[in-house]
Length: 209
Image 1 (cartoon, rainbow, N blue to C red):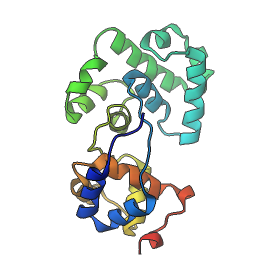
Image 2: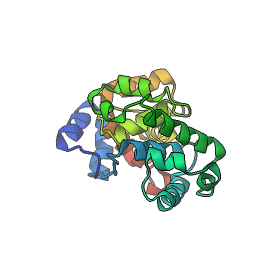
Image 3: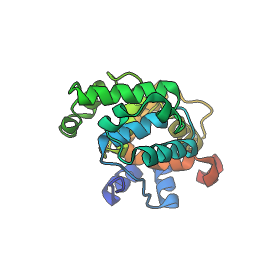
Image 4: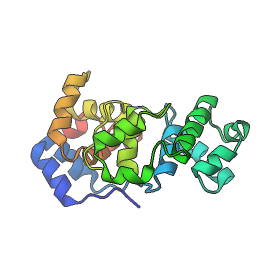
């Protein structure tokens, strides 16, 4: 499954911002995978905290092979050493087990998240130890397919904005200007900003002159 968007969203963004519009036209349609299994996506996002996407993919792949199914019960039944052998740090093992416990004990009901607002979901998720705002925002995009998420905590998104608009720095207040401009399709803007901010794609500020 991929993040769902179409011309309605990109046409809106192009009308709102011609520079972002140039990037959208240059890059073309994007496909980013989403995982509708919220718990599995939560574990994946915790794994990805503060490491490269390549390293995160490797660790999560080993975890999936070891557990077969990434469920709260399977996480709780695995001992910490087994989980660390997949490449997880001791702290991330603690975070994942804590999330599994909260869900198993009914402290958080993931099935109810679908019917809640973005703000309500973030508030509930960040109550879990080790789940910060960035983790919750990534879950909103890549599991719940929410359309209006632009994360200041994401370095690649900030890099994408600075590259696109030829900025030396980007304060929280300046970032908020872009967030408001892209709303209500901030998540779609995020997809393109990730592409722009990814060095291997070769985009620089000169690309959008």
